[in-house]
Image (cartoon, rainbow, N blue to C red):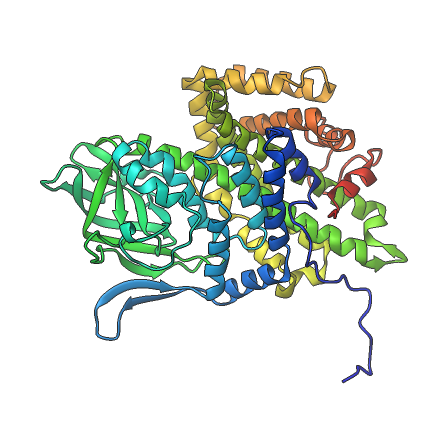
Length: 544
């Protein structure tokens, strides 16, 4: 029926049918910069296909459905048997299946695997963020399992498979598996050495029974979990399968699903172990050292996830403002809105450049790059995830009331935005980890400073910021209380170095003037008006 009271006008059309990868200049240029030219045609093709899928109306509908129909816990079957299963909406399985099929759990054995996977994870997370949790943990489990060559030989081909094999069955009967982890407990949180879950050795070598609880165990329908428990020799890492080799269910009592702030699609649970069979990974008493490689990989995924969220929010803001008019002009052409968008675009490009640099360092695998990652990963995890929430909130405000309603998708992004700052160690944990590396691993600081130093002399504001940082690092008095301040400056000079070397002059100039030169306010949209803000905003537009 035709409307008689009004016509709908001055509204942005739906943002569908675009290429999330090919339309992102910072991302595509970054992949090309770090990738072997011989690999580029094939990688460009795979990421373009994934980008078009992520920007499709179908993928957006999957994301909405997975969050509108959250998982449901079934502790018992109709006869009273304990089954501890979680039912997901079909859209969850479609999202997860697409991720696995496109190699987002397969980085460790492919050429340029980490860069390809990081770019793919960045792209596909913009379809829906929640299902990225089991994708991330499955990917990250590989280096931890390599502490036991026998276990790695058995499980790694399943973890890196491109087949999404749904359902709980013995792992040996499946074409591909997913992994989760269980580290934190009620009484300890990030202090995992306070864990009380007990591990008692069986007669068979490496086999134990676990008794205890885990306060957070995401994606409980995964096929296996890496968990920490107290063995006679101290805190130890264990592999806990959901289904045992003979087909019986392992003891894995899901007590409840968490009612979370962020995504509703993923199931985060509390679980109880009571005589749960487990296989030791690594040596007794070296649980943290064994699982730390998994933690490092998931921390990088937190950086990727936050950078992806910032880009997605920016894309929505730019799309809306280039179609919406107010006070006689398109919003995107109005000076103050242009300042806001440019500021968000600078934040997004800095996060993207840092993300890809870290992924490329994983691929290089040299001693120098490993030392760089030791300090750069927690630094990036601290800063990029911290910047996510204010950036998403500002992008939502660009849409005004349209952004405040659920149909826009921005509220879902805003609820998701704090997650990566909390997961795998909150801000204080990351900042203190950087201090630990500074104090115990001088080669890590040397590698970091060498990376930053590659831009020496290119911008006077960057040079001055590096000098100030060195002064800050030389003063050890009250260093723990100043840890956030120090790590923030480290992150900014690293991002500044990357942008000065690789970004267009307008973007690098805006970053250095605001983040390093301190010609900036305390909110987005306070860049110096003399900058080439139009060029920065134009670069942020979706291309293609």
